[in-house]
Image 1 (cartoon, helix red, strand yellow):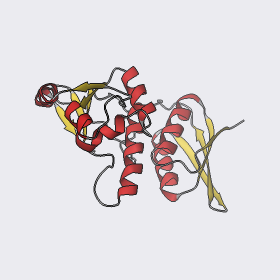
Image 2 (image 1 turned 180 degrees about the horizontal axis):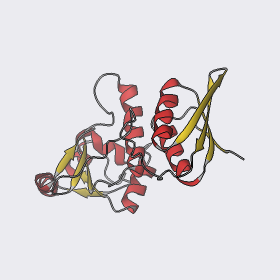
Image 3 (image 1 turned 120 degrees about the horizontal axis):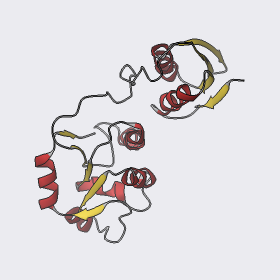
Length: 204
């Protein structure tokens, strides 16, 4: 019996992540998605992992049937060929630090940027290696409040060993004292020191 994954309505790259995990365990998989981008990403992932792919469509829902072939090394695809997955880049000397200065990812449409940021932070849970530090300053500190849409993911990243620094001056400026739900309220000395020692700094 095929393992069924219902990825309809999920934002990129969640359909890919779910499929990648399923390929590690199952040899017969059906993935349901509702957009062409997800179909193509899953098709490339499956092909790189030695799976045959059959796609059917009905009323806007795509059914992707994957069959893993014998004598294929599992995990041969790291996601590098996917259009919205993180590249597996060899880390430079020093810790990897991700800085967040806003609640939105990129510039342009604010609503889209918020969705992208939420997806980015959630995706970090499946990226290897994890960043060693995440630093939040300016409006980025709003992502760390107790009722933030990403607070559960931030706590999960903390549990995995990621150190989260939250700018104390920014917390005071936005009147968020007592509302921080993840990380440690820090100071500019620690933030500047962490950035100066970083091997790679990423700003989504």
